Amino acid sequence: MITTRKLISISVAISFPFSLSSSFAALPEPVAGNDVSPAACAAVGIKLNDIRDKTGIFGGRGGLPMIMAAPPPAPPPPSAAAPMMRLESPRTQSVIVSGARMPSGPSSAYPQFDTEKYPHATQNPVKQVAQEPVSTFSIDVDTASYSNARRFLKDGQLPPRDAVRVEEMVNYFDYGYALPDKASEPFRISTALAPAPWAHKHRILHVGVQGYDIPRAAQPPMNLVFLVDNSGSMYEPDRLPLAKKSLNVLIDQLRPQDRVALVAYAGTAGLVLSPTAGDQKLKVRCALQTLDAGGSTAGGQGLALAYALAEQNFRKDAVNRIILMTDGDFNVGISDPEKLKDFVAGKRKTGIYLSVYGFGRGNYKDTMMQSLAQNGNGTASYIDTLDEARKLFRDDLSGSIFPIADDVKIQIEFNPKVVSEYRLIGYETRILNREDFNNDRVDAGDVGSRASVTALYELTMAGEKQSVDPLRYVSDTKVKGGNSSELGYLKLRYKLPGQDSSKLMQTPISVSIASPTLAAAPESTRWAIAVAGFGEKLRGSPWLDEKFGWDDIKALAQGARGSDAYGLRAEFVRLVDDAKDAKHVTE
Image 1 (tube, rainbow, N blue to C red):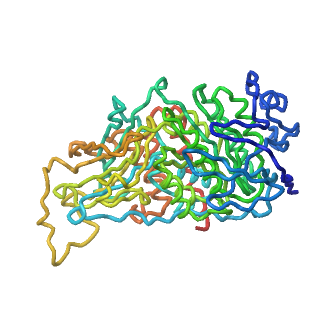
Image 2 (image 1 turned 60 degrees about the vertical axis):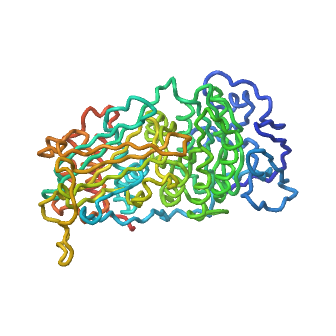
Image 3 (image 1 turned 45 degrees about the vertical axis):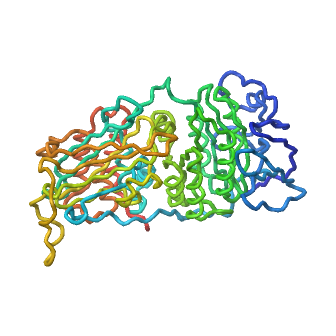
C-alpha cells in the first residue's frame, strides 16, 4: 500500500549561515555512541518512529521537517498548504522554498522492468602514426563500470556492451606505482611495453600516472552536502537502504573540523539537515534515517538546492563537495541529460566538486550519471554492495574526496620510426582534440589524493604487418621520425586545485622499457592487460583474436595477483569464471 504524508505548513526563518526557528534550533550535544534509536535521536532533537522497517533498522515515518525547494528560475505559485519563502544570499541568487513533506512508501509509477540506459560509444579505431601521430584524451578515474558489470555477472548475465567502459575497469585496481614526492608536482609517470596476448606481434604500451598522497594530518576539512534521491524508484533494498548504509560508512570518517549537510529529493527537493559538525555523527545518522522512498524524482531541483547550499556555505579552507546518491532516474523538472550537463558545467567555476554514486538495477540511468560526473568536476562510482561502499568511503576515501589536480589531460606523440599504428584501449567518452590539450578552458578529469590513472595502447611496431593496406598515391616515407630510441613522447597537463592556468609535465618513452615476453613484464602491466582483455571481451571487441578466451584471461590474471591484501584481484578471477558461464542480456 502506498502511503503519502499530508502537506503541512512550517514556519521557518532562515539565513546563511543557518539560523532556524524550528526543531533544528538549539539542539543539545549528541549522546555518546552511534545508536540510531528513537531515544538516542530524540536526545539530539530528531524524532524517529518506534517502527522498524523490513531491514530491522528504525524508519523515519515520523520524520524530520524538511524545507522544500522548487526549481529555479520560475517557482510554482504559492498555496495555502505550502507557503513559499525566499532565501536571500549576497553570494547567490534567491532559492525558493516551501513547507511540503516528502511522500513515503513505494511508488506505483515505477514498474519493475528493465529501462537501464548507457551512453553508446564506438570503440576507438586503429590510427596510422604517419597520418595521425598524436593521441589526446582526458583522464578518467571513475570506477562505476566495473562494479556495475560485477552486478550483472553475479546475477548470471553478461552486461550490456555499452555498460562496459574498459578504462573504468582497469582503473578500479591499485597498481602500486611509485608516489610523487611533493604536492606542487603531484604526478609521477611510469611506462612499460609488453607483447599483446590477443594479437600476434602487437605490443601493449602501459602508461601509469600516480597521484600525490596528501598526508592525513594535512588533509583539509571536508565541507560536504549529501544529496540523496529518496523517490519511489529508490525503494528497493539495493537503493535507498544501501545508500543510507553507504553514507554511514562516510560518516564514520568525519572529523570535528568537517561539516556535512543533507538534502533529499523526491517530487520536490528539501533541506533535511543544515551544516553540522563532523563530531556530531549521531545527529547526522538520525537525520539520514528519517528518509523514506516515495514519489517522483525531481533530481534537477535537488541539484539546484544542493549547489545553492554549498555555495552559500562555501569554505575556502575546505574541500567543498556534493555527494549525490541516486539511480539516475530523473523524471520531474529538468530531466534531460544535456540540460543537466549544462547546469553542472556552469557550476565548475564555483570550486564545488560533484561525486556521483549510482544504485539499483532495472532502471539505472548510467547515461545521466556519466553526464553529471564528466561535466561537473566530478567522479562516478556504482555501489552494488556494502563492501563497495567501504572501499570507496573508507579504504579509498582520499582519492574520492580530496583533489590534488583538476583538468588532467594526457597527450602522446608516437614516433613513426618505431610505431606504425596505435589504438587507445578505452577512454572512448574522454577523447579530446589535439588542440584541446593546450586550451585551459577545455574541461577534463580530476584526480584525488593517491589516486592513479592507467592507460593502455595496442601498438603495431614499424616493420610489422599493418591493419590497413598502403596508399597507392600518397607515400608515408616523407614523414620524419625522431630518435629511434624513443617510442614516443608523453605530455601531461593539469591544474592545481583552484588555479586557472595549467602546468606541463613531459617525458620521452624509451624503447628500452620493452619486455621480451609477457611473462617477463612487470606484475602491474600483466594485471592491467588481463583486466583490459576482460573488458574488451565483454564489449565484443573486433580487435581480439577469436582464440583469446576467458581461460586465457584467467590464467594471465592468476599469474599477476600479487599480494592482493583486500581480495579484489581474487574476486576478479572469480568474475572471469562468471563471465564464462553467463548469458547475454538484451542490449
